Image (cartoon, rainbow, N blue to C red):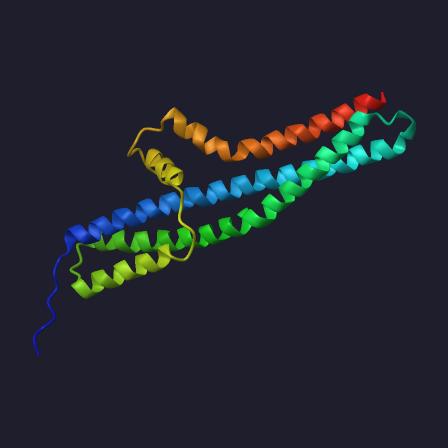
Length: 197
């Protein structure tokens, strides 16, 4: 039997190490984004529900001062609370963030393994390289993909690309609606208290 031939495969293993590290950083950013957005939506849901209860109490406690504006606010809050609860339920940010956490941790381990192979200058066979590619693909398939924005943020944080202003705006955009709903909740409670004063 002929001895097994080992080939260096320097460039493919280095490329795989770089790609896995970039994927790890992008998935890490995706997990942070999903967790942050989920927390803001949960806060919006809590504020809307609390505002709905508060305005209802005001409406019931002061029947002699029932302004039409309070009834309208109750309807608006009820609809917003329903919509937000549906968003929170269907988008399930918490579960998605947990899945992304497990995925980026697996990618981190894989990235360390490939970087160690590159630094050790170990000789690997084509079969070993294909096994590493298969392992990488398998890890990538265990959760949803990160967004292009997650990739750009990861690249900017690594110093590969500058961090443009539009990227800062893009990272803030997913939390603007929940923040607006929190403000609407607070304003609604203030208006209902003002209406009975």
